[in-house]
Amino acid sequence: MMQTHSDILDAIRMHGAEAYPEECCGFLLGRITEHGNYVGAAMSVENRRETSREQRFSISAEDFHRADLAAREQGWDIVGFYHSHPDHPARPSATDLAEATFPGYTYAIVSVCGGDAEQITAWSLRPDRSRFESEPIEIISEIFVTP
Image (cartoon, rainbow, N blue to C red; front, top):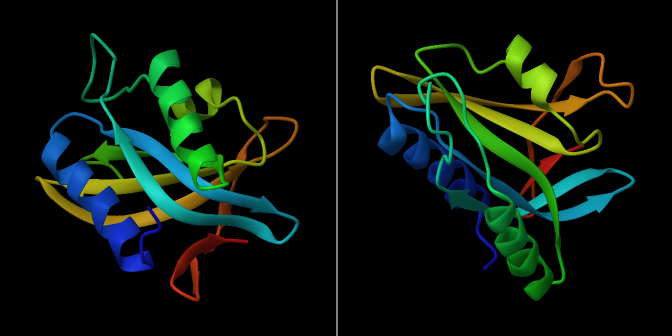
């Protein structure tokens, strides 16, 4: 299941472009370490939101459970989430902050403009949930890393 860094980033971009003009969403699977989150795979899921899908996404408990099982099969964990911002920058919105629940996870956002996936950024939610802080995306030994 391990993907190269190019595969992970390409999969996120492709999912964002395919879902456009709606938001896409998915999981980041890998390992949480003291040095950061090591992402070995991206797992796309369906946006379960019923309304306002151009500006919002929802992930079901069943999808979370499937992602957890897929991660465990690899000896990994869920280390974060990704979603797209159709025709908006790849930075967290006020809604992203209000709905984020997992400090320590990586939140990746891909900007999709006019159907073309562009920049991917990574963010970490502060422990007090007051704001997101930017995380660099580094490539180490073909693994997407957000230290």
